[in-house]
Length: 257
Image 1 (cartoon, rainbow, N blue to C red):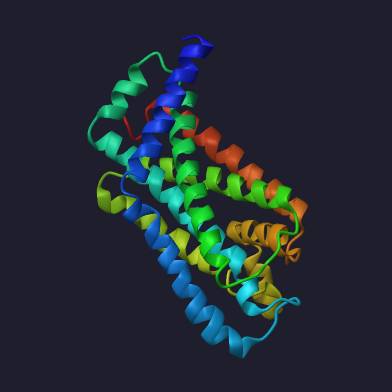
Image 2: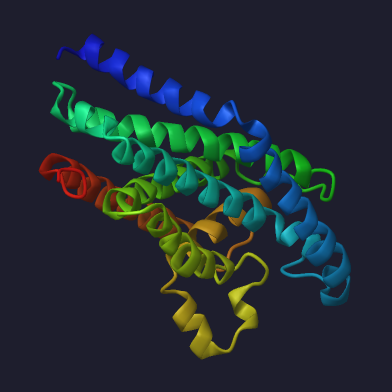
């Protein structure tokens, strides 16, 4: 396939994935916005009033970056894991695999669909956040970079999960037992400086901590982690997962009977 044909194929997959979640926007876009609003009411207003400031910011403002990024992570992941598994379940992915279409185009198309949903939900949640917080963006470049890179990372992870899943129940194991605990322990609702030294060290083994802190730096200008280190770790994870996912597609792992 020449470049123009590959571009058409990529756009076809990406548009299909976009339309897939935007058609049911009441189920895919609205619930995260409602959930975040509840977080702000319960944690930001009720509990936050008892906690006070963190790093010079109201507790309400401090949790904004983490809540936005949490929505991006969960929706990017959910979009790809459900879509790719459905394609595998209905055998349509096999037709794509045996076609002349390069596997990296297939991978990029699904990831782009996950990023589209992650960004759409992220923007929606950011709009909701503005009703509760008057934060100002400290660094637009870092904010956008972490926003998109995190979405790419978890979209890729969702595809890997879907490839190895054998039933619809299997696609909920990683989000429930791995993704959710790591997200909540990634510093959304607190600074790791508030933890004992031992648990600060343990927390640094959580990759989501770096994403949330880098995003918090982009929005508020404060971070528990060196931002350059955080960006390097995010990019490194993307390269590793993308390479693994591409190798998996090339070898038909989890796809071919």
